[in-house]
Length: 346
Image 1 (cartoon, rainbow, N blue to C red):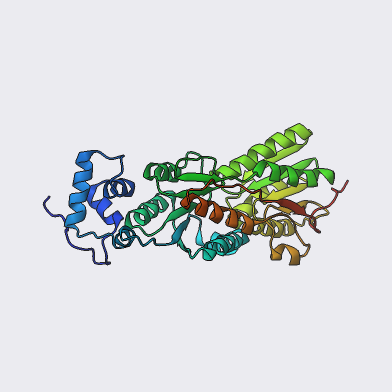
Image 2 (spheres, rainbow, N blue to C red):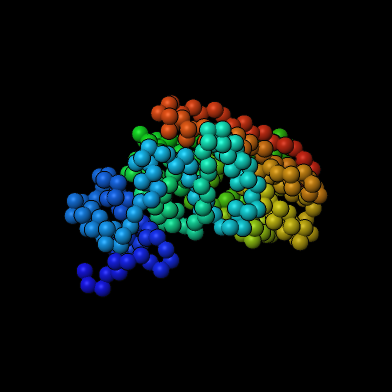
């Protein structure tokens, strides 16, 4: 092909993405072709392998695996804004739980940030083709998630945290968001709240959809008024949603937020509007943290053991790699009542 650059890119070693770009295919197709897996035609496979050879691509990490040396590494890509990853306590606790289990078996955690699902999928394909990781953890599964489809096709060991799809080399660690939502609503309803607003995280996430469905079902069954608005785990979006809900003539008497970061932003907006927590409106965070305990007023929160979820995900990965049945121990959750929730006035 005229004009093809058959040398290494200036940035360094040739990557799967470089080959995909040159061949006009996806990174996943390149991974399938290089690893000899079904999913691409013989003609496409031959063309990809020819381009890889011309570009002098060499799978350094895969070579170690072929010599019987496992990379002993588990990969995790976080596709969330940098500020969200840095601020939400869930990630810190979850990663600590994962690391505590992996370290006992001599595995490391390879962590990378991505801007979108396409980038995350490309990273997965490159890790697998290069033999960089023994398995992959996936967080925040979406409805019709392309990452899950891709990993099922590649047949590489993977654990979907909060997923509901299983395959030969892919398993899901399930979270009982329906039971968690019942726990949250039981607390507020027991206090006498009959108008409850729920400011959600990213509604494309499967676990957020489960929470929304549970919220709708339980409020209807209890005969109380409930409304949801997206906050997308972004403080400003949470502020905007709070202002919108509380500006209505008859707003909620209680607000649920999907993270402590959004809840803090919502409380700041309530103060700006001249509303007092919990006299005018109660506030409950879906995530607990040390910050919730030192705010004024202190914040009622659902205490989900994110570290236990991390340990469960890592244990499932090791069981998968050992070809053992993957256990699913329950992750407990309980509402920690504090000053931000009370009986509604009037």
